[in-house]
Image (cartoon, rainbow, N blue to C red; front, side):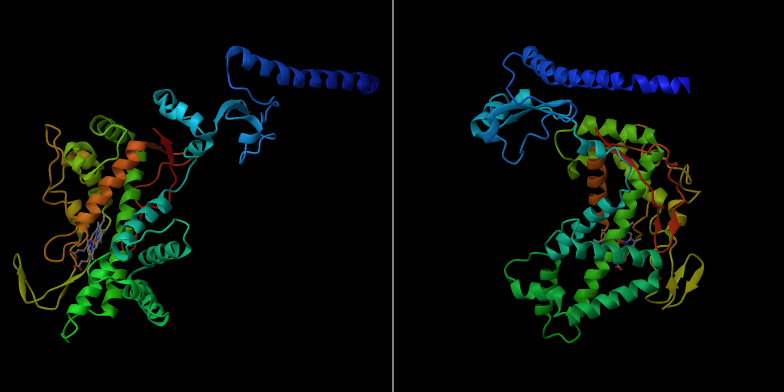
Length: 426
Ligand code: HEM
């Protein structure tokens, strides 16, 4: 009680001191800090007096700062110093005439965000989807385009729910595209220039035209739509999922990631983008990509085949019309072929001298007559996306997150369970 009554009697003088001290602090920051900056750097560009904590944020109309403060002026943003260059002359004098002096980049919160955990699937899927859109429709889409995302989502769902739904999705899309004034080939037919093939749909329409008189021809509009959706189905999920596995392995095997970084730095550096020709000079990176495909085993059960005529396999007879499943997983993890079939081991694809070696049992795209039609495209995509990502970022498991699992889940393809990563710009 005594303590309380003493506090009560002291209150007015306490507030007086508090306010006096607070005001002095503000004046100190406003005046002395401003003076300090001016003094420390002679000829530092002038600028308005800044407030503590917020700097000049409240005083500046960032859309039109020029009129108020001049062509070159300084600001304080939080605790950071900022100089603004306005107009061609000022910008030329800095960025062109003193090019080297202005070559660094500050760290902004945008980049800091890259350090926050996120699931890479959305970005990878959108990028891979856009490759197919460019080839097929001659066009890419913004990542926030609703129709584009809806299409990718349908494809993902189809792969996650199973083969039954895949045919339903295609059927549904086929009906929609025919009733909605035929949107898929419609626009192409209206704008097509027969002398100039813009994309896959144009090429298919040309074939339809050529085969007009042939009643046996399979080039028709129904088949065009089916083919386009077949292509999207086959191309986007497989490549997306493989890249998601690749990043997951980089999280789990930081030593492999470090070696990939070192090789990319040595061969490509940071100033130019990777190109396909670099592949031969990046044996370790290439081996890491091949090993990703072997180990993640995306199309684990292959795609069913059917015998075209009676045949013989080793000592066995298989009649015409028999469905055949070649289990690719059993090849990619064959214990009689691979040194460490059940481990992630890029050395499977390197010889003693560290040079890349192809392996006969590497069949993620299957083999023979019906081998994956997109193998060449997929190879290029995997190499360019993976190398570019690793050139720019270090990937690690976010704090307090568990190590992502290698098991994943199997439906039509083998996908990783959802995981998050941190991407730190290098
Ligand atoms: C990492 C990526 C990919 C993997 C692992 C993969 C794997 C496969 C596999 C195992 C098959 C079955 C082949 C067989 O029956 O023997 C297949 C078929 C097919 N793939 Fe891919 N694929 C990938 C990417 C692509 C891409 C990018 C495209 C499109 C450009 C594509 C288009 C096709 C098509 C059209 C078929 C059916 C071929 C046919 O029936 O003749 N694939 N793929």
